[in-house]
Image 1 (cartoon, rainbow, N blue to C red):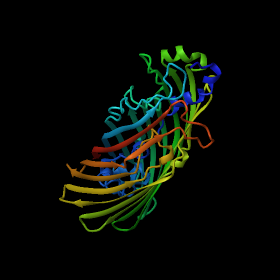
Image 2 (cartoon, rainbow, N blue to C red):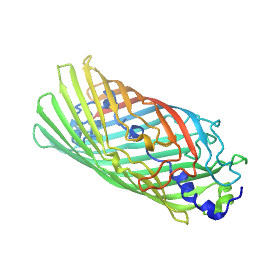
Image 3 (cartoon, rainbow, N blue to C red):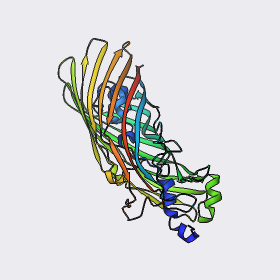
Image 4 (cartoon, helix red, strand yellow):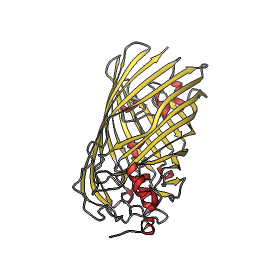
Length: 445
């Protein structure tokens, strides 16, 4: 069967979209909540009201006021994820020979080791300017995700590699208004990088594949504000807000030599690209209550404005038309409860439970977005080595809901655009979980 240039051009938008379809759509896996080994020990319960140290300033900048003098807190979270993929069916797209259009490719790899361990650092420093005012600086990674399937997996046209890192440097001030009320605010400088890879087509009758890679970066400015209220001794109520962050990504798309040689006449060429993404806001409510001299009870609710991410639209600086991938995320809540127990003068134990709702809708779930609702089970401890130095550690087991990805060719964007005509179809089941080990050092000097 022969194909003309005009026939193939009808699939050009979808081919470009196949490369652009990698995304930041991993819900809690995309929003990195492991910013404090202390807070993680109680599944973030009480995170925006915690009295232990300054690491809670990530959720509520008013908590810089916890610094007795100069304070330094360094935390690292080792994330050990697991993801098992079972491909139920996969069919090649209807594209020109020799691409075996419509053939069953479900017997190819299920993806291999899709997710790898990662280390998330967090650093906080606070300097007391006066009895009531504290200045601080912090480094965090609020959003981050990475997956990489085998290059020969059955869904390679839907995506092979996704990597996103958003690094943030924050400058904060906190002020104690009176004995019961403290306020805080920060300005944040964001620097983000993204890499999105996939095969354009599965050239089964050849010894090579047609691959494409998008790399882009951007910087942006955000802010946070927070309030800490202590209605009575031993009870702390905290509210913190982290703003949306608007990124204007700029980068390039590069195709493999095989793709350029075979498809260049159809408009597949290396080009500059750009797109606009608004990362979501986060509103945190927390409470900490001293139930007894040895027991504290805590709770947290976090509302994340995921609906700011409705789509990813790639603008190619070439004859390739814009491409779009629909997110249509839903705003979601995270809930946690926990407690701490003063086991001895030097040792504090913690535990917590959390439920984290995924913003991903079933109809728009893809191999880039195989996330489901999550449950956390956390344990932690802090050991006071001296009056000025303590060490915190925590363990969290994250259980992710089993989900199904069914891209059957019926997916349409919010504007009615076809999203999968150049990718074919895939139906796959995902089973995921993660273990997180965190360790932190806190020093007052």
